[in-house]
Image (cartoon, rainbow, N blue to C red; front, side, top):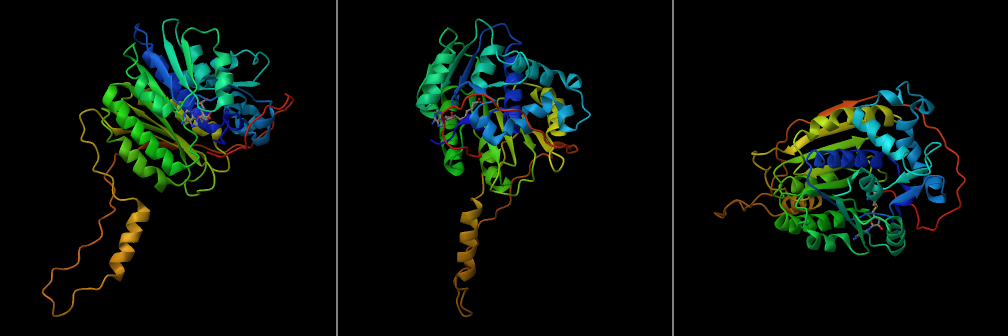
Length: 369
Ligand code: SAM
């Protein structure tokens, strides 16, 4: 457990994830009955952007900073002319104590959720790392709506479902220190969760390095038993390098009706403002719509397929005089057909720097997710 979100707080991936989180909470609030937010990987809840960790990577400068101060980044866009959801999200960040004179503090998902929730709503937060969990406890010591658990979020999830409110959303935002293993843990957790609470809304964040690594996971999610599955993605680099975070996405299981319409303009604006050396790209599409057939089962992973093909190519062919049936062929890797996603592009803008003055905070090494 080396990952510390303090190195990454407010980066382009947080911008997408937390805008989706606000849209989901607002959708929950369209009904007067209370709801529960369950954050399985909560982090410490709040991050100093002028601290050592954020200063070391400067990731927020290519994230939230570009939206708040587009003119500093060479963009002609005006912060005030942003789509309303994005504007409300930025206002909520600036309303956090410490940001009175501009962006100094970045609230994590637990604090953003708590600030958006009503008095009757509640939250269950899980965080495994002892130091992060202590900070989280401290942050919400006086808030009776919020319950902090220092434990494994995957293990805790089943026990927290269904929430007593019978309405709510689960955010799954792990560090992906071992990407393949994390997919498997998410799949196991979702499988168990869907048995206990099939109607819950689940938002799962995922990193994009190589596109081919993500596809089987997305296919699994679209067949996990949810009625509707929406995917929102933002790519700031081409998705062809395993060495860096090229983009990220959020899959929403049982997504609220019309969530795609709510997210479309904000995603377009994010892509416009977060572009770097090339125009950023975005995707917003239903991987599964209500009433539609789930896609066909996942084909074998590419590594296993390649091994099978190799074996097949070395297998002895049928002897000319043999009456044996022909050797069986390696399975096909054809992916199931999917709807054409809506996507857009925008133009790049230069980067900028912000000052760093806060005392350093302890933490592990920066780890690109
Ligand atoms: N959700 C937070 C936000 O948006 O502000 C960021 C969370 S960060 C990406 C992932 C967190 O999960 C880290 O703080 C890490 O310590 C914690 N973590 C790692 N494995 C965990 C597990 N199995 N259960 C709960 N927390 C875990």
